[in-house]
Image (tube, rainbow, N blue to C red):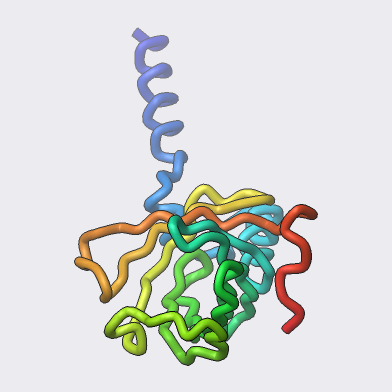
Amino acid sequence: MYKALLLGLLSIVSACTKVSEENELATPIAHFSAEKKALYQSWRNTQCYYEERPFGIFLVNRNDTMQEEFIKTNGMLVEFDIEWQTDTTYILSFKRLIENPQGTSLPDGLDTLVRKCSMKQVGQTSYLEAATSNMTAHTDTIYTTYHRPDKKLGPVMSR
């Protein structure tokens, strides 16, 4: 009987100490390990990229207040304001079109674009962004994998 009681208590204690991914996103970074804090912070001020078909590779330059995205295929450069809600969530709002050398037509409403983003599956070389946007149904989640640059991409951006 004592063995059964002990096993029951151990299973309850271990179940209560596990943090689900959803709870982890709501957990302030102050409660993360030092290694995990550094990992999330490393994506806050960085240069990275993602690929979006059929547009190609987007080179990203990000700091605490803005994110620039350069589309390699057409030379377009777009700036977004970034507002960090928590250590794992942020809001991107269209700020301005900096360059559009090919005169590519832009989607209607781009100037009002707002994306609510959550960082998931965060690692040293990539993370998965889950985002909703006012340009799509708010219930549609868009998943984008951000990567650290590698040598085959060349320099990301100098700004």
